[in-house]
Length: 240
Image (tube, rainbow, N blue to C red; front, top):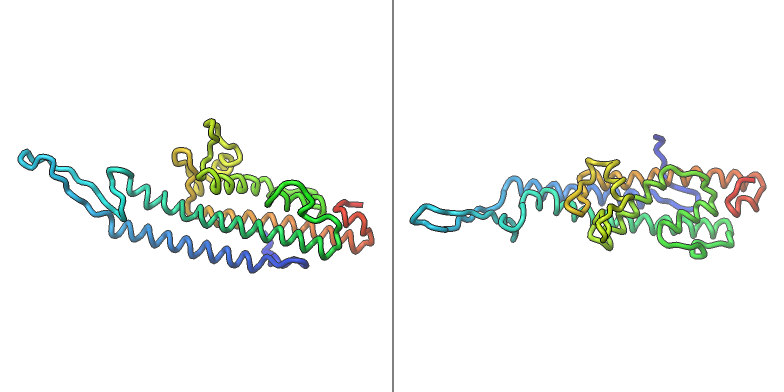
């Protein structure tokens, strides 16, 4: 794959991606440190006398306020808590990218004196920005947006439904389960929730970058139409 700088003529995404990549590195480092500390120090064992005269005892493991009688400590500190951490970072990453792509659309409209602004279009968030890129910039085809839609659905579930991959009626949310099936090493099912495993954040960042590859190709075609003198066709995002 060609490595692009993501410095478009009307907007520079490079700093945003550098910040996101650094955030992912620091987050994974903190998660690894926490898991290593748990594995090395381990839970404290407390012995409970049930019937000392008869030699009956029980033991409970404690770690950071949780005990083994309530939860599986290994699952909590090796998978669940790291996943919650990654979910939080995922929401931050998605919000940053969604904000930046909307600013890109606004800058595009201002530079090219487009009478239609992104706020004139239906929808909201990334969906509306993609509609702008389709209709105004003129993106004719996209392979990556299907993956972005799955990531967007997962984002909505993380923000509003505790990262569940099932609806309230018990039916699977297809876009989310499709994403999980496509990346079984990066996402796991935990009852009704999605667990974010190591590597999931990097995959999401790469998906955003690949989508921008397609946006850049659409921009190049737009500029070609503009330089050819067909200002009207370029302004409405169609090929003469």
